[in-house]
Image (cartoon, rainbow, N blue to C red; front, side):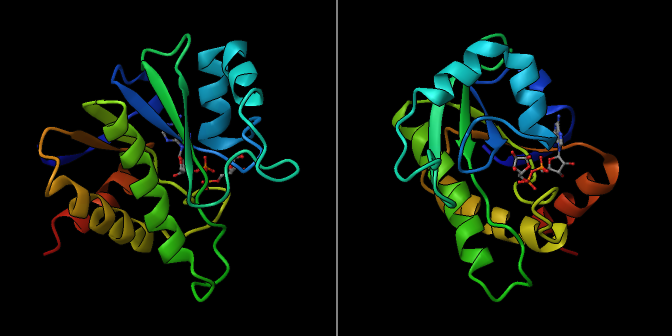
Amino acid sequence: MPMTVVTSDLTRLALDAIVNAANPGLLGGGGVDGAIHRAAGPELLAACRSLPEVAPGVRCPTGEARLTPGFALPARYVIHTVGPVWRGGDDGEAELLGRSYRACMALAIDHELHSIAFPAISCGVYGYPPDQAANVAVAALRGILDTHTELDVQLCCFDDRMAAIWRRALNPV
Ligand code: AR6
């Protein structure tokens, strides 16, 4: 299945999984992370807290992903990932962002999920320029969809301006 760009509040999507743009502690935050925790209810925080720390305060290093149930969300699962903080582009940001997308897809495939929606990881608080992030995301996802044609991947943008940027990355003129 092709990738599609949707303009929506990610927390409203009734899919197998939605992806959370989290921070390494996985105990909530602002942006889409805050919205997901509010909509999922307090059980999500408890589930995140129960994930093992791999270093003090770190449950998910940058570029990795973790899966929890979706609890009160319409989505069955939440795949939490941590994108890179934008530091100008010469600090491995593109590699780390690509890794985040691939780690989420690997979890979806392992759990035999068929539909998954991503927010624009790192494009809010973490400051990644959206046009560059969209190109990284599309390249990473295409590499996986080439061999996993059963997956329905939605690129969920909060507003039309962001959706236009992602559509351009999908269909460059
Ligand atoms: N649905 C879809 N997209 C959304 C929603 C929503 N409900 N809310 C925000 N966005 P951000 P990051 C968009 O800041 O840059 C948190 O505090 C938003 O417009 O959520 O990866 C975490 O705990 C933007 O385009 O994530 C981390 O500390 C995109 O989602 C940090 O922010 C991502 O923005 C992660 O920063």
